[in-house]
Every structure is written in structure tokens, then in C-alpha cells.
Length: 221
Image (cartoon, rainbow, N blue to C red; front, top):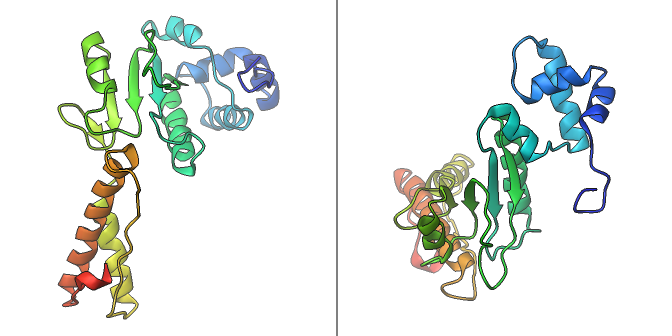
């Protein structure tokens, strides 16, 4: 049974819903050739609809290598829409590449001793304790947010701010306001991420306005 109390979806159920054999579903899962593109698309659609997730051990046997990647929210709210979108995208992209993803919860003691083969870290803090923890254990990881001495990834906030400014300029607006996100606790993950994101968005926004000869007074931020 799945963690949320629902019955775990089986490969046989996926095959029945897609109108194909179990062998065909297996070939799609393992990215083997010889499956009609239309059937492959149908199988993938059924797997997504049923939220089918093959066991990590089965996938490791198929691929002959570790395939489990952990996603740790850190101290972010796992129910927040942002994280649900990130989680869903990770499931989709990693699954298509032969990996499974496991959400790893964090308590006050930090990450559990037993980890997956690699990790993705959300809500990165200044001097985040998870980073040295993973480095010491030789676990490969990527941080979703600015972090020192490691690989990290983040959306292009500067480009987003610039596009927003260009859009308003095209609509003919000349007097602008830039509203930043208010975060209460300095040093928190939210402060660290949103301060960086807000700064980059504002920089891109002002760049777009400057190119159009429009000034953004400090009183309008």
C-alpha cells in the first residue's frame, strides 16, 4: 500500500488501462526500442494518470545502476504550490530518464543517515548544514537556490523581472511600482532565497525601464 493509504498501482493495472501487454509497459519503462510511438505515449499517459511509480529496486535491476534520487524540502513548506510544482516536474523528468525520486523529510536532526544515491536540496539556507553532511558522505547533490562551493540551480529571476518591465512598457505605462516580497526572519531559507530572487527581479525590471528611458524612484520600491 502507498504511504498515503491508497493501494499501490501495479504494472499489470497500467497494462490493462493502456490496452497493452505487461511486456510492452516494461519496455516503455526501460526505454527499450520496438514500441510504437502512439502506444508508448498512451502508456506514459496512463502511468501519469494512475500516478504509477515502479519500485526503485526493480528499476536498478533493469538499468544495472543505482537510480534513486532523493528530494529534500529542507524547512520549506512541502504543501506550498511552488514545491508541489517542483516535485511534479522532477517526477516527470527523472522518470523519463530511468530514475525514481523519493521525498525525504527533514526534522530538527537534519537528514537521515541512510540516503538515496543522489540528492536534490530545496530551501537552501546560509551555511546550510545539509551541504557539508552530503559532502562528507560523498553523496552527489544539487541545491535549488544559491549556495557556496557546490552546484546549484535557480530560475532566471533577472530575465523574469526584465520581461515584466518590458511588458508594462509595451502597454504604455510610465509610472511604475516594484513590490518586493516581505520575509520576516533574517537568515531563514525564505529570506535567503527571496532576497536573492527579489534583488535579481528588481535588477531586471529596472534594466527594462532604463532601456525605455523610465526611472524607478526608490520611493516606488
